[in-house]
Amino acid sequence: MICEGIFETSGLAVDRENLGKAREEHLRYLAMEKDYWKQKRGIRWVKEGDKSTALYHSRVKQRRRRKAIAGTLIDGDWVTDKALVVDCVVRHF
Image (cartoon, rainbow, N blue to C red):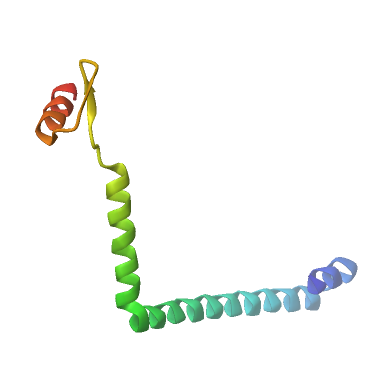
């Protein structure tokens, strides 16, 4: 930063104070920017809430289908009957 470069060359107390003020101001602006994006995200959700919710639920459904156990090997045979698969899993664990 420019302020740090000035401080390194002179080292005066005034420069230290200016550097501290500049850092505080920078942190304040960063906090303001963070709040801005947080508010903007909230506004977007209010406008597009249903669309986002539908998208979220479609992703959840896709994940559940992908992770579902369709079948298992029992004694070398592939079994897809839900009751038999559940029984096999319960006995295993």
